[in-house]
Length: 369
Image 1 (spheres, rainbow, N blue to C red):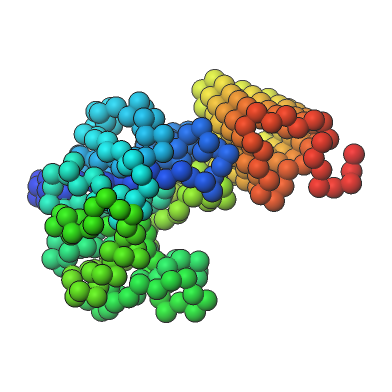
Image 2 (cartoon, rainbow, N blue to C red; image 1 turned 120 degrees about the vertical axis):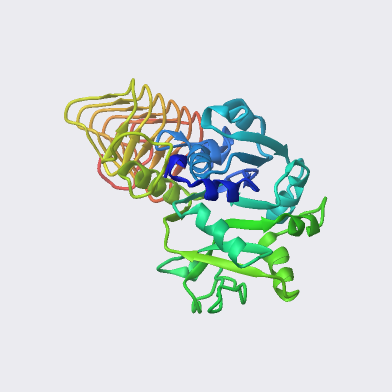
């Protein structure tokens, strides 16, 4: 939703709200792609992933955003600058040593000006109404409001049950018999005074230390529960699925223009006759897709060459990589500048490191030649 749709009263309510995005992680689950770039800067539906979150925050009516950086911290400011091109006021705070989620929030305190602070994990793709989360925080006079989403299978996540009034009653680790389908969505509203209470200068987990202490202390800890789109983009599988959902319009993003569909082919890319590009595939700038190639749910970065007859499915192909004729790449990650030889088969979570050259037929999962 554009800011034009925000009433004067709603905008006034947001004048005392600013956002913090934690983007300091090394993104180890997405290696080798994150060896050269922080995870929030990886192209997602053709734009750095962080652009989608920043655009969502802007369209909610929040103007000031503090980025808590660490790994390759300089990349963020080099790309986004002061945020003016996105209609935002961006500030950067570097975390010199790993401080955890709670320590990362406490580390940006000197840069905060507002009394209410929205905190986002920088690797979550979401579509929930940010303003509604803030309204819940105000209406409940909460110390902290947690955004909770309902998921079909909560067993892989920590669960957060709430009572009839929305007050959080417990924090539960992953269990095979969860008592609720509500999980922590990685978005919180903190009253500034609570951030001031977080110990400074040491690692602190907001999930394991800060929130349980608030709950045990009888503080006002509430949940805002909804069914909005939500995906943690930390694994290759989720990264591919999230990018595909953006391209097809399943996941919302104010950063994308034009109609959604089966593919997003960027200017300067070439797709030969007979190639099939479907499933929310992204073809990056300057990429070349050969005749008869099949790309289904693929994320193809800029400058990639996919030769004739190759198949790339549910996979990420890094900058400038090469996929040889009749190669099969399924559920795999190909690093920047790598070359996969003709007729190679890379399946089931295979990862090729940047610059590696696989000879023709050099890696196979079948006996065919």
